[in-house]
Image 1: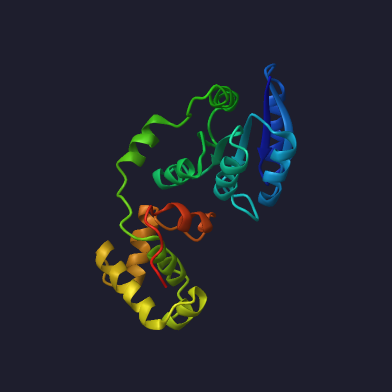
Image 2: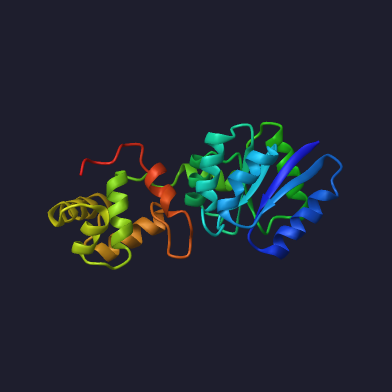
Length: 224
């Protein structure tokens, strides 16, 4: 029997997934969560084999939850549920430790099959999306530069960026100059657009900002 936890904030959607998986003889739903902050405690209590996690959970977002689960409960394999089937979203999910990436409009029967395959140790990802992710433009920005650009994306002046990140105004300007040069942009607005389209920072309507700074760059943040 494969034990499953479902983390989805929309009650009707979560209820439908529970009902769907409960009809499978080899799958048992042992826990549910509707808020990101609930997922890790519930998983630690029930220790499911597989956790189905919505990428857009309120509170702690799904990718951050997945990263935390991979650290604290490595025996629990995670599958990200999303309506955002893009290479950047997939790359972030895999970086966070997800074993599967399932689009919400997939056929109903595919969900149970994905649970089985992930529980068996396989990685479940749409092949075309995986190829697109491999060929996506690599991120040239450091973790600190991403942090500066993400804050700049809110349209705040240099002084406020500096205050939020505990940097000097001159340091922020230097970071912004390097960012423009690396991404080939002439203005901050253009740099933000390029970074969002490439998936290096989240769009306004996509969760997971905290995970960007931890996983988008392999290099350590620059000294303050």
